[in-house]
Length: 469
Ligand code: ADP
Image 1 (cartoon, protein in one colour):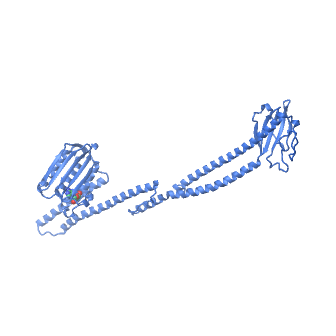
Image 2 (tube, protein in one colour):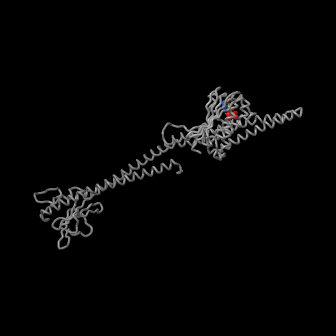
């Protein structure tokens, strides 16, 4: 239950809020309490100074105590009255006091106000008291014991239960407010967390729908720029690529089955025909062998592509004289070119590179064969090998039938034939040659590109990076 991100976030959020509120509460309470004590202590000190000042000027016996009504004549009076008439002494914040005098090393009580404060323990000699005196709290009374002139020690006390009660009320109000705040924060936090994590729900439900087969489903993006929207965008792009590759795989399988069905039907038809003579029988058998051979080549090409798809086609590279390699390929297709009176020109820079010679020759042969196949009799094919600072470029240019612009983007797709009418299954024109050539180029970290114009000719360029060698 608490393993979901949202509940973990909410728990940590709640914990932090409780911690923050608790901290603020404690700080507030302690601050208020120390402020209250500071005020009480200040009042005690003032009263202590007042009594000390009187004792400097007068002898204690000369001092009078004001009566409860506060009537005074012109004689010196001790501060008071200690308790105002009608006050409940327990509730009163009146300052009470008691005075001792050190005589013959002993502390003798010499005066005490009505309801005088009680000092528990021995009263220290004035010389043992620090200038600031001793502050202490006795039940609800705050007391200050300080020294005065003529060996007097004065104890001032005041009841602060009223102030403590006010402080307690403040504490209760604060706890109540904190509970309300906590509930509010937790509710807002839960709402915010749910809102922030809502896209995750959408992401997982979309991923589930896609896994169930609905490849065209995508995560709805609400236009925000949060990290989750970014993640949704990246996932949608991955889903696009995934869909694309699955659809291509499906098409590839169906195209391959379709291509294989044609020769199988031909072989079956031959097998079911009833030749009337030995010659007819031999011809039929030869056609079967031819079709089977062509089928074998198709299967070889399919296997080759499958190996590229599964990255199972590791290239073994060796230092290769590319000019010699291209020249050899040209020599191999010369008879074919001569058959169609096609002239082959070549301009080859001397160039050496670490490549797989068999694979690179396969690409060049494929480009040359295509150039001859798709060029009318009497045409011309030009092969160039150009070495630049960063690349090695091999181009095969022809002035043949060219390729329509709308077909160019598909030319390297598997089983794509720009001109279906010319597709010649007998000569293994299955539309796989360029797809395989591009895989070989990519495996060498290179590229294979085409520029072409219908009825004018085509230029195929195999570009290999030099730093790879
Ligand atoms: P194929 O074995 O059918 O030639 P490729 O993959 O080598 O298969 O070529 C795919 C298609 O590209 C060909 O069917 C053809 O329509 C077109 N093509 C390839 N090379 C050329 C070229 N030099 N001139 C015109 N069209 C070409």
